[in-house]
Amino acid sequence: MAHDTTNLPRRTLGGQGLQAGAIGLGTMGMTMAYGAPDEQSGIATIRRAYELGVTLFDTAELYGLGTGSNEQLLGRAVKDFRDDILLATKFGFDLSDPARIGAAFDSRPEHIREVAESSLRHLGTDRLDVLYQHRVDPDVPIEDVAGTVGELIAEGKVRHFGLSEAGPDTIRRAHAVQPVSVLQTEYSVFERAVEADVLPVVRELGIGFVPYSPLGRGFLTDAVKPAADYPADDMRSQDDRWQPGNYEKNLAAVRELTALAEGKGIAVTQLALAWLLAQGDDIVPIPGTRSPRRLEENVAAAHVTLSPEDLRRIEEVLPHGSAGSRYSAAMMPDWR
Image 1 (tube, rainbow, N blue to C red):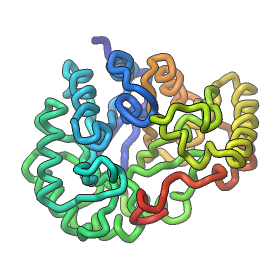
Image 2: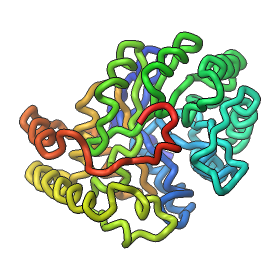
Image 3: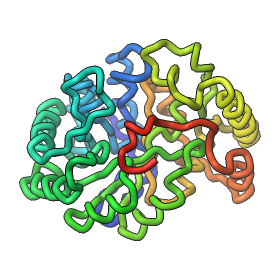
Image 4: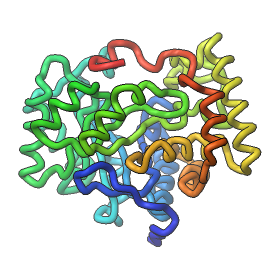
């Protein structure tokens, strides 16, 4: 398979030697949360991403709801070029009770090891390039988590330790035990909470930053519609930002951003991704899609340059992010 790395600039994520193409690919929506899975489109999108120079591919135990389906799909898609890319996955949820999936945590050391071994098997690989704690477990000291991942690194099963949605104190405590290479947390023109306390800490400690949902879970596109128009198995049907009142405010902001993008001859998705890339050269967003065409559009955003005036105008449109909350308190045990 042809691999044209010249299409996508590379970035260094923090001080632990992790390098990746400037845009990564999130695979969650290929098996959950955004309607019925479409394996064929998912595999085609992953392989096209590789051709375009994407090197960071993101999955998680959670995305298969305990079945391993998301990791297996990614593993099948990348088997011919595994050594050219970075595979990132996550542990940290208790998936034993379907009624509590997403709100029950388990980062006990023995569970971390169990999930890591399953992930290696599902992905068909001998090492995980990044192993993230998906959510902070309030019942397990972060020092124990960091120590366990450190042991997996020493054993050669994991290359880099990552955290997801961790607050500043947790990041510092984990980093003191085992250097954290990357933090993954939601960040976009729609969601700005990390700017106050989290980004300064990761930059102080030399930790790279991987924004997920960089397109506002699809709100920052040309295909948004009200919550009631999505099927029940699509998370946007329940997302507060899509509900009446918030939806109209957010749609008005996206229309303003779309007008700005059209004036530059680009898509609003590309404007949103270019804005994120302009926030620092230690940032690699991982937009999710299962459409090769959308993927190509996203990757092209790495070549968009925004002027100081463009950035000022975006700040005027969305000075504090979107209207509406992003998660329930149960999903966010460490910070909001």
